[in-house]
Length: 314
Length: 275
Image (cartoon, rainbow over all chains, first blue to last red; front, side, top):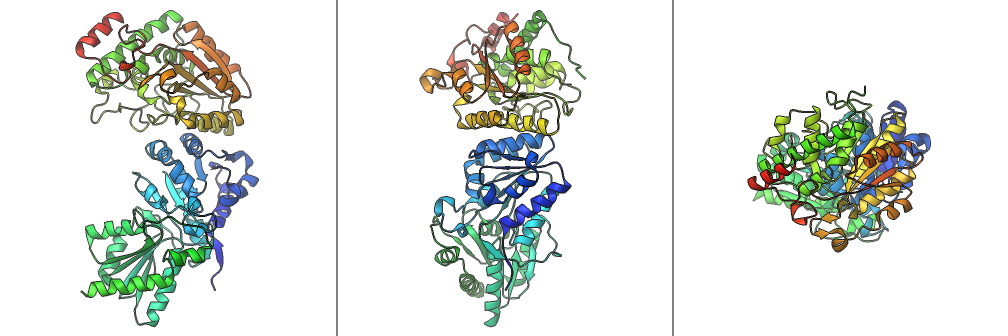
């Protein structure tokens, strides 16, 4: 069994390391620092941590002000508040001004669990992708999260990084390369490709194992960067397998599935099936029960793979 | 590095007239824009830029400069005219306001215009940015100050009060807000549309030092900026009573002149008054 770690934990640890090395890093949180794990940074570097209280709009623009003075501003809250409540601040002040603000939001997706729909953000990829010049990343595990945070520090410009509450299996290795905008191919097969992000990447790997037992060989792509999406890898993979399944913990409108469909329809159209949340809100429950309810399990990916393979035969 | 020659009151009043003339000409040429809230702010801005702030038009990104944020971004014709007059860019650019390809966008854009500290135009956001800059100054142990101009319609935005609370919490004594209180917003008088009164009491209750002045009285404006600098342990707001459309008789206190450009004839009439 793979080790289980929440991506948000890796974020707090990465900030601690980076805070030591780079004195320009400042961190802002909106009264959720224990949950987002920025409290670790706050304890070690109290002068460079700003708790802005329950006021996300002000927090975003305070971060923007800090960034105009050369600070690398990390801003954290739950995804719904960072991207929903403060969307226009992110759009008009941070992105339009091209400021070096890194929005790292936790508690995305239905895997938030018992808190219910109000706190389960399933629209954030879409909300952030639509803003011109924004970069959007959802790491698949703790190891990749740490690399994404390091990459964010080295990248000059606004960025959104989507993290989760629940522990997820560690499936990537320390030595794996992480480049913004460059998808990672985790395994290759000739029949179908599963393109996934975040927690759905590990489910896709399990799905590929299940398919293999039935003689179906699947490629699995970890599309950690949702914007800019890696057209080159998508087209290359689409040409090899001619059937794609996308998998994400997000509404189908405007998320990974939409991004992949948009890229392929313009460059190399192939049948696509999408795993994601179809025009519904989340609800209270444990993550595994919610994954079953919203058809986000490996078994669901297997069925989608079979459907898309049937479609390409026609 | 205080390159700016500090002007006396008479010279400041002369500059203000020149700036108001630029504003009228720019808006008439552009055919759209916001005269009322540009003209109400001119005197406050002229004293700030020509008399108070530490800045250098030849080095807009000089690290130790005082910062100014026009949170009520629609008043940008006044700011653009001052920036051009001081040498941030050529005064020829003023007539390109709002045109395709111009460095002077309809609302302030920090990427295209030298001297603009942050893009604005969507109301309610600038005070928070000013707070961020003030916190950065404290962190870097620098003594520059940050000024943010707000409108009295703008402070109906909830984010202003989030920022007011936070600036007080962080004891941002290096932050000075300037309220251009012209009593009008797009749909009418503040007291009819959405009263933000009583304004000084609100800011005091949020922990701010409040200075109330007439925003067209130069002695009062100079006094207010100097007084604000002396206040320790909390931010200051200068609540400046102003006249929307100040300086052009037919625009003064007229809500219709919030967002309408003068015709050629109206501009000529205005320029005659501003001689």
